[in-house]
Length: 128
Image 1 (cartoon, rainbow, N blue to C red):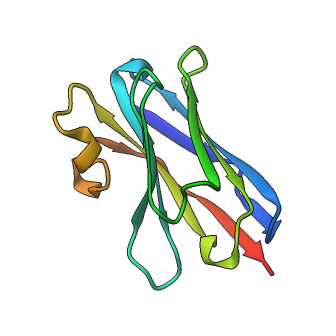
Image 2: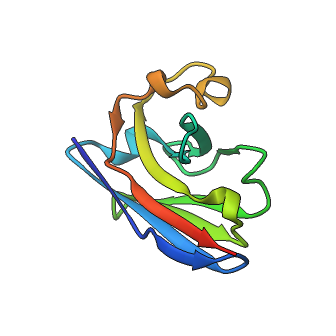
């Protein structure tokens, strides 16, 4: 299984950026997919997660109303649309996958060690 995150870069505060995570070696729709991030000097934290069907999503409070997670199961790809980012969103963004079924996923999606596979990360830098 491989997860390849891309789309990071330098963006101005208030701009927009879209991250992608391309998956291979798995039946994509059988996995919850998630974005985590790790800012310099901080622990990795959950950003958002999406059910295998794409019909159910969860967001960290910091992402609600600004970021949108989505997936295209035909393309084995997950996305994170980042609108109006601020400097506090500067971090390495990682994608992760967890095999279904996953009981009580809406509570457990924030927990790193619940996930089976991780991508390598893509750096997002937000300038003021």
